[in-house]
Each structure stands twice: as C-alpha cells, then as structure tokens.
Length: 290
Image 1 (cartoon, rainbow, N blue to C red):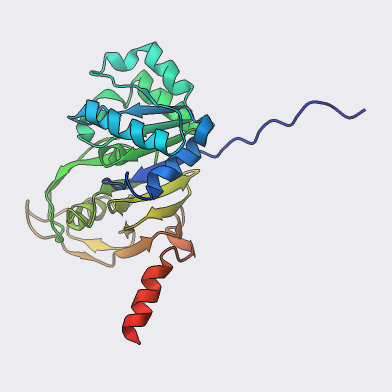
Image 2: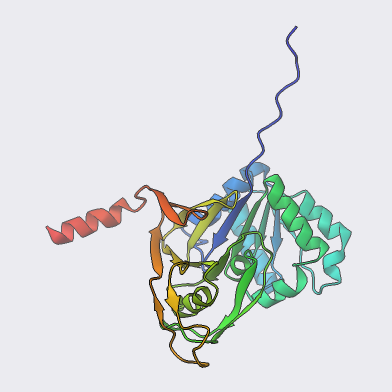
C-alpha cells in the first residue's frame, strides 16, 4: 500500500544577498525584488534590522514601503540598541521564525558591536543554515564576511595601513566584502587588504548591485553595476615591509569584473557562467561602432 505521507519540502540552500548599497527602491527595484522573491514573496516573513543606520525611523519606513509594494507582508523590526539587548530571547525568536532577514546600511561598527558572538548573531547563523535568505546593503553587506573593512581611505592606489579590519558575522568565509565600490573609489583599500592577507578573496560590489551567494560556493550577480573580485593568492607584494602610507607594490594579482548575469565559483575563484543581462547596452555599443 502506497504511503499517503507527502514528501518533505526541499530545503533551500543557504543563501546570502549581499548588496553594494544605494539599491534602486523606486524603479524596477531589481535587487530588492530578488530579495523579496527569495524570502517567499507574499508568504515571506521578513525581519528588518536598521541598527547600523543613524536614521532608523526613516530606514524602517522606506524598506517597509518597498517590501510591501513588491508583494511581501509588512516586515518585523529587530533593532538592538546595545550588546545586552542582543541577548533578548524575544528578538531571537523573531529571527528564528524569519524567511528573510535584511540589514540596512549605516555604520558597520554598530553591527560588529551588537551581533557577532551574541544570541542574535547565533540566530542569524541558524537562519542562514536552514535556508532563510540573509540580505544586507552597504554596512549590512560588509558585516556578512568573517572580517570586514570597518574604516579606510578611498582612492585607486593601495597603500599600507590605510584601512582597518574588524570582526564580521562570518556568514561568508574566506572573503572580504567592500561596498559602494566604484562610486567611492574603494579599489585601493580592498587591494591593500587582500595583498596583506592573500588567503582572503576581495569582493567589491558597486551600488545597486548584489551577489546572490549559494552554499558558500558560488554567487550570481544582479543589478545595474559590477562586482570586482580581487585574487592575490599568487601575487607578490611588499605589504610586510612597506612603511605606513606608502603605495604598495602588488604584482600578479588577478582581477575579475563581473556584471549582472555572471556566475562565479568562490572555491575555485573562477567564472563558471555568463548570461548577458544588458542587451540594450550591447545594442547601443554595436550601433555606435557601425
């Protein structure tokens, strides 16, 4: 006799949506639309964490408007004001029930002080492991990695000791994330970090652009900008010897520039697929050359 028991639903792989900041909220909202879809759409249970922001009421209002406009129910807000509140079990239960968790921009040091090593931080890891999508923009993107750039100078040239690392959540291992990448000229500071720590891969994400990371292994790019991957594993650098503020010598680094439609393997550090997502741009360029 056949069993009447329905098969268990397939568990979603651990998924991160890491956004470079200033994502479109009023037009197509491509990146945030992807977050809502991954969280479950009209059945989503989204928790919004505005903790990093200095304008928390405005952030809550803005994301509540866009998430509901994109079809999700109104999000629940979790906003610990200090490390003690990050132990509140009522807040922990809200994260344990979420299908999507979104961290806003602001100061990543606020997130670093209140989440890693706390019950709320542990709840974020549990949510990620069971398949809830963890999204973050700007500061909320940087906190995803094990180590994050908490401050640093802007500019193209990598310089010695012009940036500082702090502890992140470690949801993404083996990488350092930087955001607002092209718009705030952050190539130099990210290159200086991975030149000094070549076992880490640098990931710089433009504004209105995101990487969707599955199972810690591969990511796909969404949005209107590009993602830069900096690989210094085989590079030569004078980072151990350069004086403070000096331009760094870095030779042999590999840089990948990845627009929407690119899929990248983080474990092998290589492009695995590319599907053109901006055909209008391609047509315009072809017409200009004709």
